[in-house]
Image (cartoon, one colour):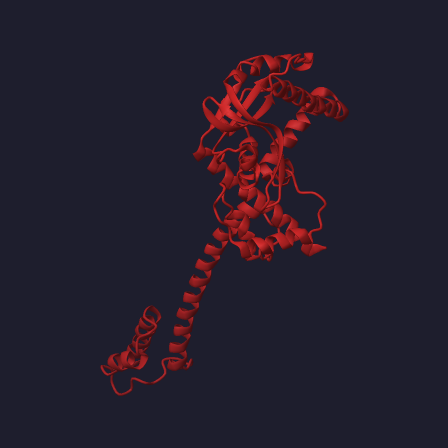
Length: 348
């Protein structure tokens, strides 16, 4: 009996078994298969010499390596997901940038008064801000602008480019943009005077349509607590100026007046305006303004859009749940802003 084919088959099946089950006893498997062969069973079947110990080790190492690769792959996937979530919040370009734990004071910041914060983290965060040696706190508008998503920046650039093309030059666009700002300021002044029951409210011709649009809504504003007031968040260090705190349609609200050339039937179509409302509310609730005004936490907001066409203004009442949702989004943007400042401080 020629034992060569048998030995070859025995080695083949034994090696295949080890490859599939790398932890089995190599010698035991080989013994059981070879004991059925004739006495010549251990002759080499080719010029190649098989080192069975080496084969077994190689298979075990390969299996272990595959396991390590799978483990690394899973970790990479998890890390990628974590990185994606982090980048959504921080958008930091440096992968190696390690954010100190005390930055959590921003993300964990309460919306209402009387809620406690981690004093240790806050002390370190305050020390960091002090170390920036800034002369004034960032405004809500500054934070929003510097943390816009790339898609929002693209939309804004396209709008500006189309407007410049329509108006004929960038200089004309700047005049147009300044006109919008002036109209908003004038309208705010007229609203403020009306709510203070002042006489001789003079509406300029350039925003008569806006005034016609919004004046009917002013009848729903009662028991005004504050108008055109500054606010500063004492714990995460931003500032702003809100339009009004009053009872609006029987609910205590922080109200923001806006002008728009297009209708805003949905709150989701108002871009970052709800963030602005939530940011002001958080600053009011966590500062001394509540005591000054002798009011409880402000839990509701309102966005009112006046139109130059004179169409009735659109009112978006922001419930407590909606305000809390946008407060969480605002904290993400504020976190990103301070991370950007942290990164700049490392580069200097």
